[in-house]
Image (tube, rainbow over all chains, first blue to last red; front, top):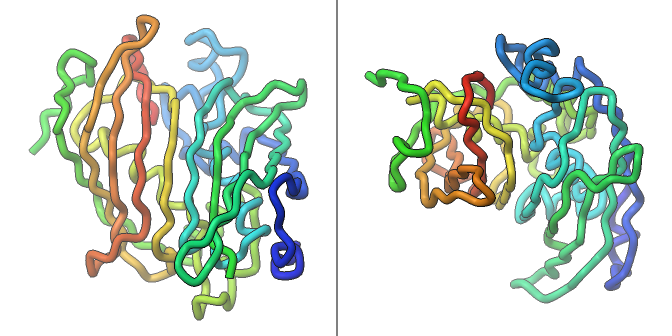
Length: 139
Length: 145
């Protein structure tokens, strides 16, 4: 996804292209590092702790939002980006997440425009697993 | 030298400070992170608007999230909230370190939480990322971030 042509006409209410992520166990293992007694990487332990499967770290969802925002704003997210997320439901190994964003606000900041986006992740059942805002600088 | 007591809500003190080990950002680590989050942006592997490759901006977040492991055995904690400010790009060759401070602890609906503010810096003290996160402290024994 390119950014400049899209962001040149950013308006409140603009819906960012969604991003879909398959959260496989190997990805979780790479993200969290395989450890004993981990609810992320030790399936038996996760089940013993009452979870139906190993959990992805909530932080993985912030990476997905970051990918969406970098695709949208480019360098103005890598340097100048902000994010605030709450992890509202577990994400399990094998889940498929869809990342959404809708422009909430634009306002001047220095020689740029800060674009704030409502962001959230939904699992394959339509349950919101993480929600918050992310912003970056449009130049 | 830390004695690695098990982290408990009661024992945790607001104002406690943590420092991570130094992490060398290598192209291989950037690629591993790209695999983990399935994001293979061209800027991670070649030139970028910043001149040379940069890492995914959240790449060092686990260094911060694991700060408390530098002193405690950590009963598994679910991560409740995360805030980031990405101030400077993370580049291969940097030696990054995170420093954090417990700024709040509270109980809500019978569950204990801790709030940590942190910065991640390069070897010159330039702040790359500033953040704040809220973690729930499990009362039973496990060992995860």
